[in-house]
Amino acid sequence: MKERLGKVFQFLKEVRAESRRVTWASRREIMAATAVVLIVVFLSALYLGIVDLILSALIRVVLG
Image 1: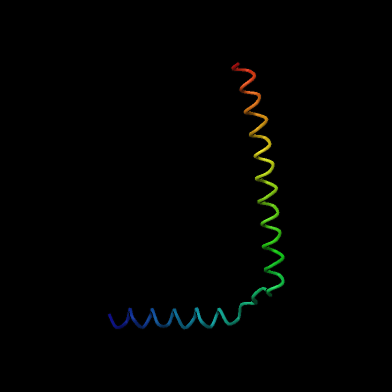
Image 2: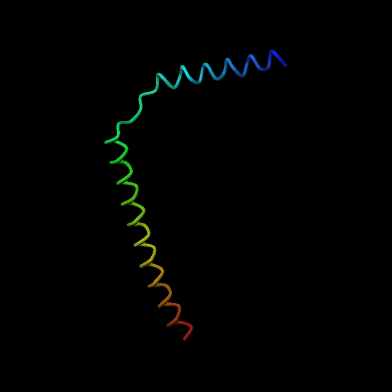
């Protein structure tokens, strides 16, 4: 049990040390990436909405 607890603490120390070496993105980079994601999501939703409307109208015409 004591050995297992020691391994857990060693793992957490290594995680902490590794996280200090990570190069984190700047606030500006995060904001830019978030904007790109939101724009792509919006455009995808718009595209799928338009396709859905067209297919719904087409199905209504075919089925009467």
